[in-house]
Image (cartoon, rainbow, N blue to C red; front, side, top):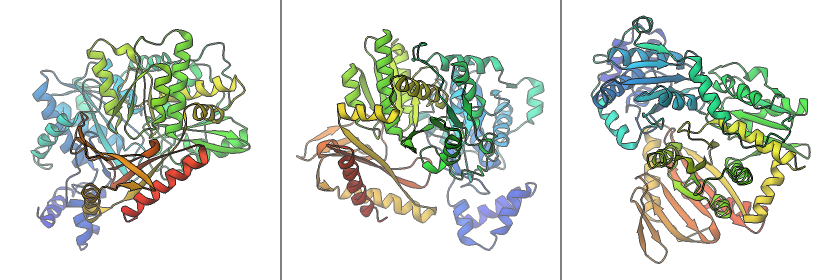
Length: 569
């Protein structure tokens, strides 16, 4: 690719877009900046597109969104005689414009559009696809990334994010599109008048919220008078979470005013990720001021939820693995006591999620299925159960990155559903004079102590991307025999679809091909390494085990330190 010629092509065709034109003009003499924006097209994977906002093929802008939409339209027209699509968008910079751009392209290419008229959570899009009988859907969001990012998630007719096979075919359709010559669009308002673009009605929202409320497992006799601070982190959760909680009796809810209104700049939370303590700092301060017992935070597209509780005057953030284990145990306990546990219950987790889940599953007789990282693989398992006429067997799905789902009405993680479950979990423990931290200790005393942590290493630009690939190749070429003094019992390479045991035995792996390495260590410890699918980062997931909490945490720290050294960080 001639990067300079591509740059000049963009300069020529974006003169009417003042912001993009100014950005391109500002880098006219900066070869490195031109390379960074044009060395590749944004990669379209099973999560769609995600990238930094700005000008160029390697950026999120109206032209890359329009090109992707033209490719998606070609794919849907090839597979459906009367294609239709649902669209949702979050509070990020450019989200509404990108959603309208996609709608204009879809309708111009004969794909009917149903679009939410206001900000709505990602799981409500998954619901709308199925509720409205669409052949697919898109959400304009970059989830929990910093403000400079936006993205384009694509869903299939089952409400799941698209499969690897579909993503590959859509990518080929996109590759055939010239962004300044092949894209067809009609004005948004013209599409509305013609009936090709329709606004999704409040009836769909009501059906979604009713389905969420149907996941309640807390007996009505348990008091719900807990004091909650909830923050949507300037995102879409404000449209559904308070409404859902209040309908279920959780009415004492305070919202930090500086984080209540949608704002894609995230002025009080530069990294709106409920996995990190800083994202909850404003809500925690309000909770201390009010004496509130529980803090909840949802990310901008409201598919993840983080929680913090007060203990001995300190506010403690509960990790995704810890909350997943607590919720899994709680749902099993409540359903068993209520007599609603299915005959052959199924739960699903990702391969990087705590091994403690397997112990809980055995206690309650639940079949636990491991899938690759990404909630779409959990949604896929629900679809398989549905096709087998066994949808009611599913009771819970979760991942360590704060994603949870206890119903089958959507096929993606759902922070509206999860926020309700967390409040019910908290109320149930409080009714017994216990905190969530007490509940966690009880689980560990029963099943063993596990300490999990996530470590990320950034690799910006083309050089960083090449270095990240080289590191993965090196880990494959020279797998360690021991880590932090613990023997490596097996190495699973999901790209090669095989597990190699320490004694040389090999076993095939049935999961889809993925650039992931998993190391199972002595004593039940684990380490998983994979490149992020949405950011230029290498992710390291570590689980340590021990006789108590301190020793498990020390083991996890030692494992992380050794892998960090191998990664050169």
